[in-house]
Figure 1 (cartoon, rainbow, N blue to C red):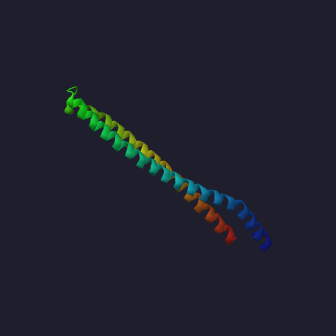
Figure 2: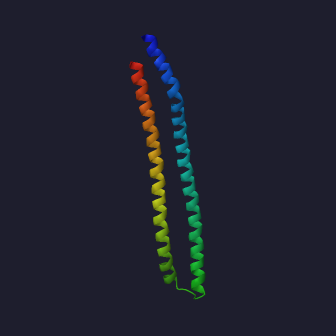
Figure 3: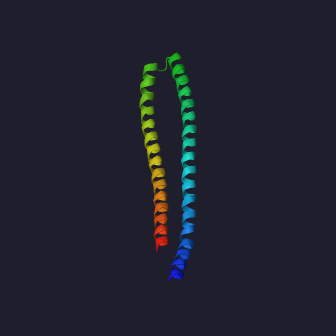
Length: 123
């Protein structure tokens, strides 16, 4: 009987170990994706700052040439920037939620495989 239990544990280990390794790879992948997303956000912020500088230069140029008053320009750009920032926030929130859900899923898989392994070890 003991031989059967040991054989069952060996078979289970041979089946489960590759899954555990795959889960660890998934965790690493999600961590790297999260880091990549953060890097992308930082690069995007740099671009946004550059856009703000260009916007200020355009504002001054238009005001100096009497093509458009500063107040009118600011009002026009305020609406554009507000919409853009709202959409950026939504995208950021969705991506963070997705990554967190994937991390939680891999943790759950890992925990459940550990529980099955423990139950099998107890017999």
